[in-house]
Length: 113
Image 1 (cartoon, one colour):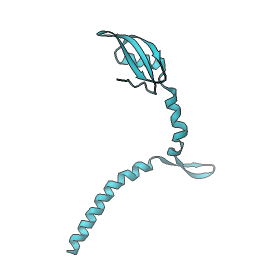
Image 2 (tube, rainbow, N blue to C red):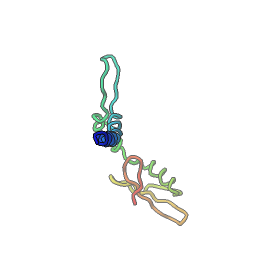
Image 3 (cartoon, rainbow, N blue to C red):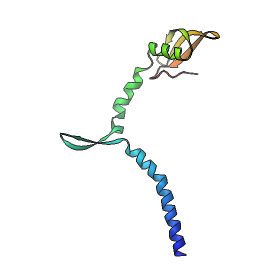
Image 4 (cartoon, rainbow, N blue to C red):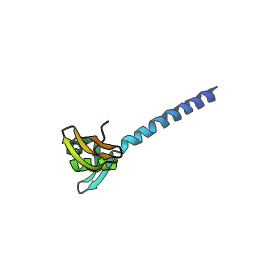
């Protein structure tokens, strides 16, 4: 009976350990050890994310990038017709005739509906 309880406890511990193990590895990937003139230091990327992360999103989608994205989507003779803080609209020709496509004014120019 005691062996059955210890085996069940061991199985439970292994199950819970295997569930929690990948989470601890995922959290550890954002920490780096840096060796420099002032010795070994721990560098945490999450701390600098607020300072450097917003810079990429403020840049937005330039009209040139929007035209390139429209050409990738199958537009010919694409031209930008409207740029706002939230979107970039491009007009051009597709196989079915004149059409327009709207991109979000964010990095990477994601297409809006």
